[in-house]
Every structure is written in C-alpha cells, then in structure tokens.
Image (cartoon, rainbow, N blue to C red; front, top):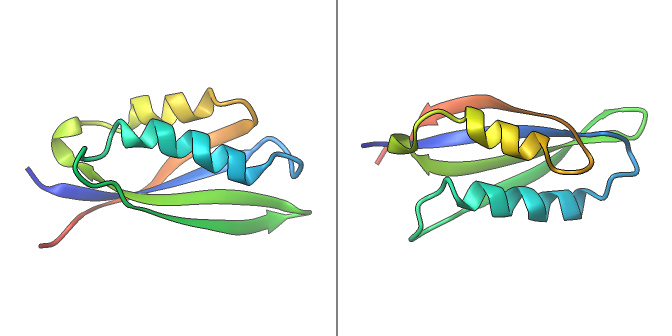
Length: 94
C-alpha cells in the first residue's frame, strides 16, 4: 500500500483558544493513524479574520488505514475545536 500525505485544517472556537495546546492534543490523536516507525508533522498557523487563526497540520498516513472520517470526528471532539476537516489528500511518491 502507498503512503498518503494528509492536510488537516482545525478551526478553534475563538481567538482565545491556545493553539499550542490544541496542536499537542491533535498530534496525539493523529499519531494513531500514522506509521508507528516514523511520524512527521508540518504545522502552520493561518490567519483567518479578526484575530482568529486556523491550525493546519500536514502528516503522512498509510493508505491501508482507510478513511479519515474517524480522525476528523476525534479532532472535532477536542475541547476548543469548532471544526476539523481534511482539505487535501495526496499519494506520496517514492
């Protein structure tokens, strides 16, 4: 099976939500979907409007793990999260 590169966008409930804490919790959940031998993340914070910022996490997942819907649902249930959605899925080359 191939590896896929997933882009996950997490919107906090308000500008007051601590994005560092949110990032830590999200990474712990995401690690369950990544290869156990190697987990790498690229994290960025995108300004939205009026001080609100989105947390964007890019990671590699094994394609045999299946759909990402359960992952999105787990992230949505984290306190302080308004929404979470997979915005991009691409097969890794190499």
